[in-house]
Image (cartoon, rainbow, N blue to C red; front, top):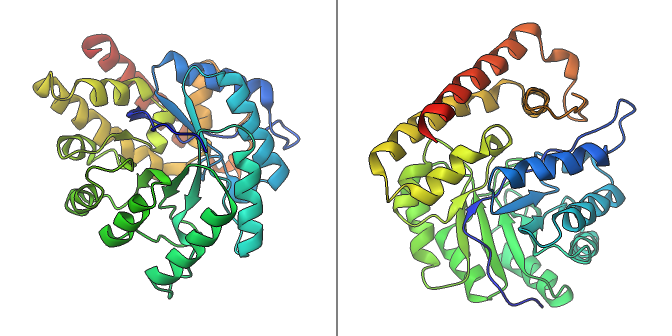
Amino acid sequence: MKNYEIADGVWPTMLTPFTKSGKVDYPILEEMIEWYIERGVQGLFAVCQSSEMFYLSLEERIDIARFVVKTVNNRIQVIASGHVSDDDSQQINEIQKISDTGVDAVVVVSNRFADISETDDEWKRRAEEVMNKVDTPLGIYECPYPYKRLMTPELLNWCASTERFLFLKDTCCNTNQIEEKINAVQGTNLKIFNANAATLLDSLKIGVKGYSGVMANFHPEFYVWLCDNWSKEPELAQVIQDILGLTSVIEYQYYPVNAKYHMQLEGINMQLKSRVKDEVELTFSKKLEIEQLKAVVDQYRKKLL
């Protein structure tokens, strides 16, 4: 198994571009990868919920992960999930196959190891079964679908003690809970990344290692700046945090189709095609909101960054 750590900083949850016929659009995916890297992100989180992974075949999940690893070519790190199955043996199979693509860690979905009514002990049992069968570094994603299972500090401490888990994408959106989790993994290799824009600055102050959320598909360079400079320029950091917190409400509009439209505005010729939402429902006014968001962010970019 690889022996290293996950880089601090910004890890966008990558979109999956599709052609008009609904196939994965690899030329556009390559353009997206370069767009993320040019904006200074420290890593890419491929094959996640933003990637519509629950609507991708296993073959597609594997091919996307392999393509991202190949395209990145060691310039930054790559992690991937694709962990969607309920059956234990199928989970082990998909985790192994994603690992074989060369990603730096495979991110397991926290709700896949136990049903909503099952205990953390059951979660540990299934996690141990995976770790016994798959020799790969792991991460954890508190994915909200099909239900959100937040990691308790106690369970996270156990994960850290195995020395197999390096990454947590935290979705609790509560700095008090995040601080408890940080304390639980203090001194270990497990790093916590916040998925929530509104709490990002406060969470960085208490020890979160970076940002991994959907808004890095809109203006990742702002998140990169905040993660890199919040302690050196606290007043400007608060201004940027206020901008990021407000603009992040756009994720509740019509994601991920709205992010694909934003990519078009960034010059990436991406179709609005999605397997989770009908692109027709991105209405004229919704598009206008995205255009206005980009115009405002562009103005702040000129003044602040």
